Image (cartoon, rainbow, N blue to C red; front, side, top):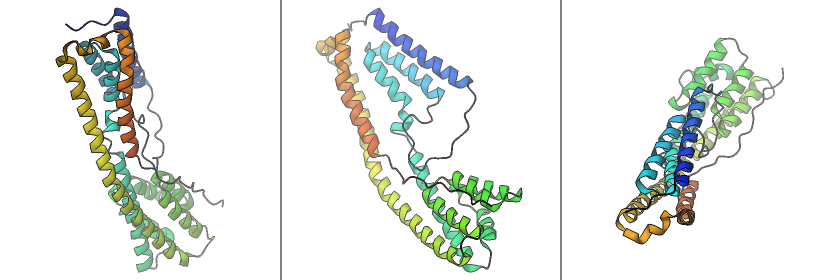
Length: 288
């Protein structure tokens, strides 16, 4: 028969789980924050942690505590459930790659429009923005609406740069601002956009190579999590008295070492899946 944890340990775990549920309830009642401009890099692990995930983590930790009577294992299980979407089911890097490809398509359309017609830069921008790639349709539609409301092109372009939140788009919009404001000639715009479109395509190709490597690390991370969970479950129920020393408070403290090593390996593999872009150059509107 598996030894029971002390009432103090059970009370501590129950208090922790109640605290997580309370945090989730407070977050559900708090007003929604103003969304920030999307980052050019893969967001951190704790970004976007919602109340449903916290409640699920509390329930998972409580179930593991009742099943295994190991406080440390319950804490690890709760953390794993809370961060599951960031560890092994994170699609944000794929969404970011599609956004980069959409920026490349937008620049190519703008380049072709400038080459194949006599449109001014402002009209070419609005013409291309009416047929945007799906991944950046929102920012482009917002740009068109701002122009229809009579907002100056310089202001609309500055807002578009913040909406796109990508270094290549920042460089293109900076060049467009110079032309629109009259600081440089329109004849150089085609060559600049052509160069930026080629750079964006090169970045897309590099991201595809990186994503293939990331897929290998992600698969390794999933296998590590599944093998670790199955091994702990097997040893807990089939090893007899072998793991009985871990039922004591001192044993729970010692359990931190193997669980910490396992969690460190998972986090290390997760860090290998992260991709950081160069820091954005802020686009400032020319003073009128």
